[in-house]
Image 1 (cartoon, helix red, strand yellow):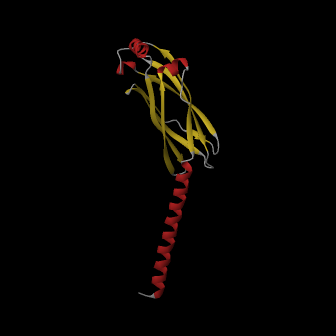
Image 2: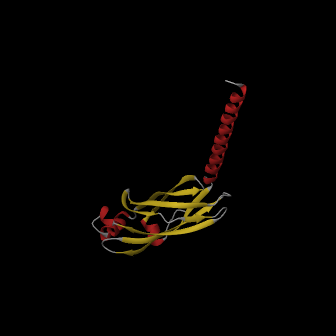
Image 3: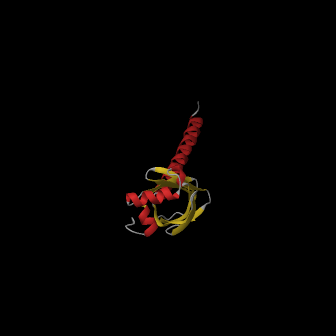
Length: 171
């Protein structure tokens, strides 16, 4: 093998290695930037009650501390009443979260109280007898910037009294 072929091979491998390292460094930097996002529950309401369903709205404020604009590609939220799942929200509508900005996003939901109780009357009776009931939200928002993706976990715990009467609500 000649010296010229060896140098060409080393040059190609070196160039490929430099390209892979640059790609890795860029992806790592973008992933670190995606970690600079926060959220806050602005509003959780029950808009209508009937014997078959509870309908309402949840409004979440997403905040960016990053210089990178991202798209919230998917939002998933599970609703729990005293530990039992009663419904979920899944939205694939893309939402843009501007760099160093905020974006309030509202979602409509429908919960099925019959997964835990016979109907909404049982839930109200339970809340009155027990003085309160725990409501938990567990989910995530999928963020994407360019080809880099990240998952922002979302958890929120409150009580039925807090939602119905706005008493002792978590901030």
